[in-house]
Structures are given as C-alpha cells and as structure tokens.
Image (cartoon, rainbow, N blue to C red; front, side):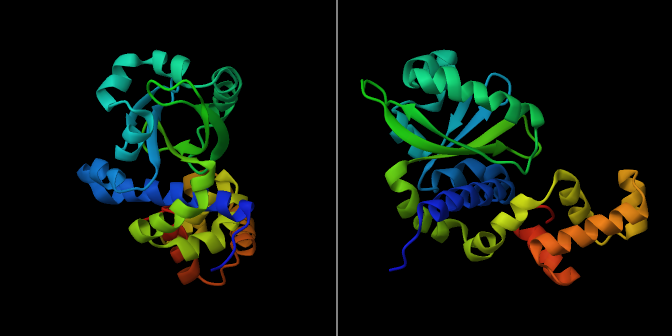
Length: 235
C-alpha cells in the first residue's frame, strides 16, 4: 500500500472539490442525487453572508440537520454550531477570498464544528471555491482523519484523479488571465481572435501562450485541450 504525505492528502481534497464541481455540471437537474453519492460532507453557501443553504446526504448525517432546518435557522446555525475562533476569525478571512470571486481559486481552512445536541466541537478540514456561474460557494469538508481514506472512495465515483493529481499544481500556478487565454486556445481561437476578445495585443497573447505551455508542460494543442477539459475550462 502506497504512503501519502499530509501535503498529498490535502492536495487530493482540493482535486476532489474540482471533480465534484465538474460532476454537478455534468449531472444537470440530477446534481443533488450526484452529491448524495459523494462520501464526504458537501455544502453550498451563499457568497453573500456565507450562509449554508444546501448540504448533501453525508452532511445531513454529519450535522444532524435537514436542509429545511438549516435554511430556517439561518445565522443561528453558524452561531451555535461553529466554535468561536471559526466564527470570528476564519469566517472573516473568507471575505477577501469571496470578493476576488476567482472561479479557479480554492481556499482551505480548518474549522471547529459540532453536531446537533452535542457539546464538544470536532475539527473538520474544508476546501471551498466559487461555484462557476452561480452566487454560491461549493465546499467539501472532512474530518482530518478521513482525508486519505475518503479520497480513495471518491475516486470510484468521479474518476480522472491521476491526471488531475499530476497537473493540479501546474493548474494552480496559472494566473486568471492565463486561464482565460488557455480556454480560448483550447476552443481553437487564433492569437488574433484572442487578442480581439481580451483587448490585448497579439504579442501579449503569444507571451501568455508561451508561459502557459511552460507552466503546464504541454507540448501541443492536443495536450492543452486535454488539460483544459480535465479542469473544466471547456466541455
């Protein structure tokens, strides 16, 4: 059995979050059924106010609350079931992340959470990002001792882990502008068309293209398209 470092485990959770987001889009109207199959606590928060308004089946078991109850509770859920440090420090640190509204940025943090009717807080580790095309944050939360174990189970549901694991840090190294350019390249746009769409010079597009290929170690358009598809930049 291969050994995974703590760093690899935490990177794995971020990759799982990207795969979960991609799965939501692919399952269309059945996205809630898809999330109920995920062996981990997935939740959606409104960007405004960071209110939880949807949790999957695992989340219902973890919290002890239904979605109806959570929505009725509003801020009372956070005030009564997050520890003071999480409520007053960690949640505030999310504000600048939300304001940047970068669909490709992932924010990770530890938070103290307690279940319904329980007095003690347990620590869970959360990866969150803006859910593309919505006013929501999508988050994937796990108990610290579950990170490695559940990642293997998620593999069976989502697939594509090996490629994304290999290139995840490459993906994270790209700037928002480079991701825009990469998307257009993968869609078949020429340098001229990209420069017109982004209101930048062709020379700048060429430099972005050069930087992208260097950062993600892709040698040709086939590899660029595969990379863009894996990270849900194009269909």
